[in-house]
Length: 408
Image 1 (cartoon, rainbow, N blue to C red):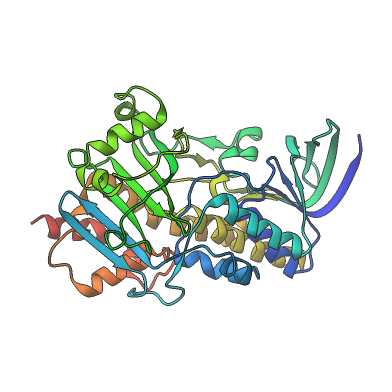
Image 2 (image 1 turned 60 degrees about the horizontal axis):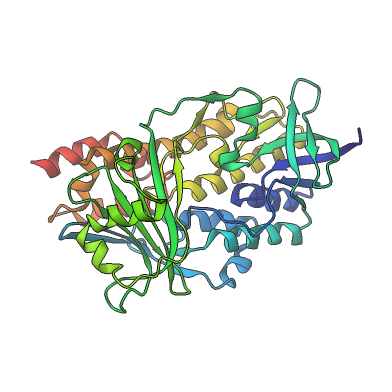
């Protein structure tokens, strides 16, 4: 078997893998990326958070993203029946980027991957990791090429950015059950034909089912007159409906009059897809010679669009730790990587749990919300879940107190 050597081997060329590649190339590292698919390829998760822009900029990819022509995004709107509210991320507690984009991920991910290649990373598309060995002095993987050849790559360090593919968690038995109930989603892209003036295309719209507080819809507008439309609910709720995924999605939307009216002229020209049991966790985010990035480590829930932000944050933390380790400095991967990453994930988790319990919905729809508290919430919704100067980041349990006040 042919054996190759590289400094850094990355599994997956999505946002986590591409941003990590860009950051590591800035360090002068040799980077090889193994990607199972051929880009561009469809992916879900189209609404970015402003915090992610800092890591895209850090990787040197900002110009590539800005010039791609994606839909500008400055906040998030929420609607439940006749109740509505919106958060403008430009009015937030934390410093930093306040705007971002809503993107068709096939194009966005390809922009980042091409930027990584331009920075000097090698990406091999349609190559698939089939086995991993981390017991030796250095990690190694066996890779299957599109031509059917199996070859081995040995690296000084291995990063798993395989997303929902979760290569290392599966091959190294790292998976552990998520604490979240099993939920699923039906989703598609449509030509929305939403009338001008009835919808703020600069914001994601999150609509709540009128009878089920834990059933919600996303409407994410793109710059080309299309949008991503989906519904999220427990699997037992989704299974009540019959027909194709598109028919099921449209049937649930029909139960939500405000959203049904908004989409009354939409052209449903793309078959809907189904995703179930997406929440995931692992026993550890790192091991000897390797680390897990983004969704390969833990995925919470799509409600606050945190996936890409967590992915690129993990890339930044891992690249910084690798830089120190390669310079001969001692690195505690638990203290320097896992714990800092989990701190922000835990903030998002508190808000996700509160959303599904209905408490956070009482907070955001409260008629007399204090402006400073709304700015703190706006910052977290913008992705600043690691800013410990924000009281709701430093102590996420404060959210429970706020829920009680808004329920009184």
